[in-house]
Length: 290
Image (cartoon, rainbow, N blue to C red; front, side, top):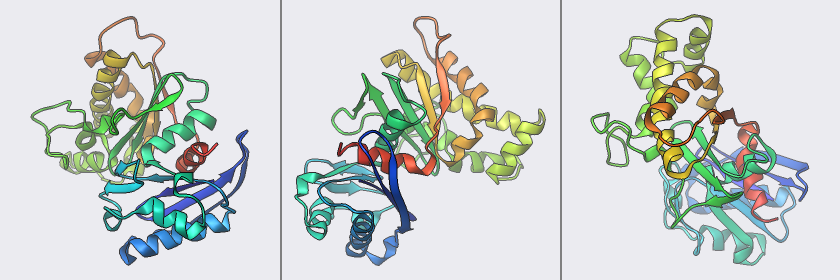
């Protein structure tokens, strides 16, 4: 059983140990109603899906995994500091250690590695392109978080003179290659900031739209080039809403990686689309309980 908590919706489902999706559902997050209401909603969805003994939970932000607490989440501010694991376990009548909490980008990477586009890959970095740029790093077939913040490629600096980022640095991947960044860059170039229209125009012909999205992809690739050099990861999985424009981003991504990486020949480097869509997070969260 897995739940993926977002700022707008809470998604969840049940999946068998061999990967068969048994049931799934979605309800509004209603974050503005406060932490107790959010946890009530998570518990209600979990009960409706048949949660009994264990639950995996994906949550955006920085976490204290040992205590089951969200330390800081820009999209779920009411949950900051709230004893999420313990309160959820109490509502479900299960032991707190049976509730596993992980960052949302990391559970998406776990899900895609188990049943999606990264199946069979030993080393892969999944990038989610949305409001920000999330990252989940799989090394030797297992999620790698280091001391807790591993895989956060969105805050790799690629242009120290670039726009300020919410993290306090300048020129991060997130402020150059997220959906939010692409909209800003489109407006600055006098183009439509509707990313669906922008991608369609880029597919149709060589023009300013294609040039812009290639530049966005190149900045993302520059961040990924650091990962290639440091870890020799050769597989990158691109997901998130803006990830649907991968076909017009991929050329720039490859150029950026080549520009900023060193080492052995990169002909086997793979830039692949995620395949599980919005189910990746809750599937990965469920995988943590297997």
